[in-house]
Image 1 (cartoon, rainbow, N blue to C red):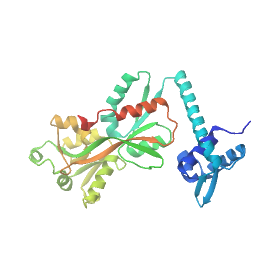
Image 2: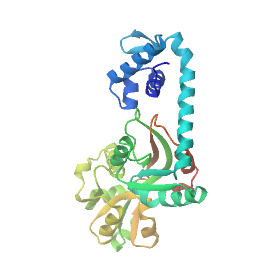
Image 3: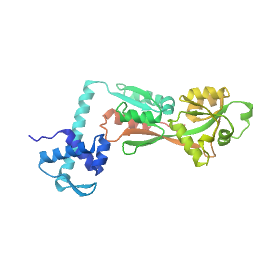
Image 4: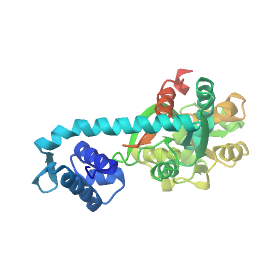
Length: 304
């Protein structure tokens, strides 16, 4: 009997896809020496050479390697289907979703409710953190799907745009702000005390990048407080503590009710993209694929 295991085949498929031992090791979270050992074991079991080392760090499939590549993919696909079939028969599917603050609080809940109506047997575990923490949870296997406001490592994660989130400047609803033009957000940031989101949040990072593009150092602002929770920021701004850059989604109800005033940062407004983030080459259960496609079909804030 051939001494082959599925890990050998997974590694072979990854090396072929990335055309690199190094990139395959990064994608599979293995050392390069471990990847090489798996390939050597597979070559020994099959009695063939699978890759030509044509140059330093450059490889290509041999004729034998090309012959078995399609067979290997078919075996891996069938094993995934077998695993999913057995899992679905044994237990209720559970999806762990990690989301940064704005999508977690102001967009995702209605999506989860709508998905539950179509897939009543699916259970959810919703975890929240800033964009960096969501990436960490995906990397550690603590979450299967993420919603984030910034991209990080394109080699490790795949990103699909979901919707655009507008960032606005908010102030208390006081007479001195009521007569100002609605596109004076930049001026307010330069003149008023500023309350900001935490350093690792996607909101504040995007705002800092925008300021630097305008030739303004974020450190030159009169920053008087840093807070993690958008709700807390709204409450201190209502009390006249300062102004803040925040998601328009997070202040929609307070602005409509007249508790806050909203100003754009320039004529067209400042927008950031919210992404659906998944680990590359992760074995994805069918329910995760269904959920991902479902999210991409949902109404976005700009559709309203």
